[in-house]
Length: 89
Image 1 (cartoon, one colour):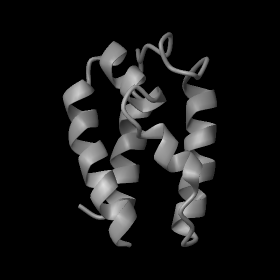
Image 2 (cartoon, one colour):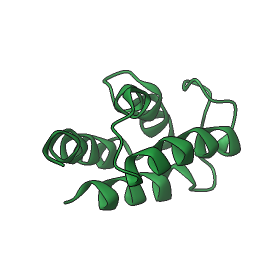
Image 3 (cartoon, helix red, strand yellow):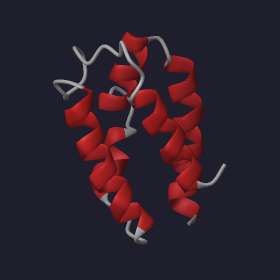
């Protein structure tokens, strides 16, 4: 799975209605998606922003969001693909 696919799928999960942002560093979906989209745009332009890597760290905001929202297994799969793709591209 290439990096753009990983980021697109993660964004889909982040935008699901009913996600619980209580344990993440974000207040709501709008705030989370704004940060994610800005970092994804940097990646799309060929950058490797440290902020994107931080989002995917264990116990980082994406993992916290995924666990509290019921898609933790999807997160684990995507985080592994992200690590591979982020380093490879």
